[in-house]
Length: 85
Image (cartoon, rainbow, N blue to C red; front, top):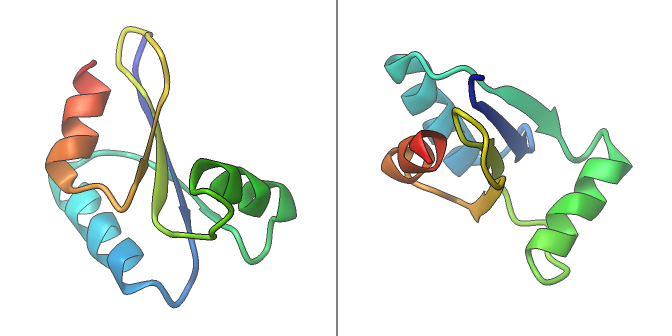
């Protein structure tokens, strides 16, 4: 079973752009969801961030299974570590 990365973002978020370019450079696939276009995703981000729409919020399902991890504005290393489980 392979892991997955879902990034909740906005079009104007510089931190999101930076993390996306780092993930691309490392060959880590991800699904991007724009919270401005998806109210359910915006609600997920708010729940994860004490009512704030802070992006990037990243949901990682570790490779090989395990508990999903939600992180706010993580570094590339944090995403890699979460994927590894």
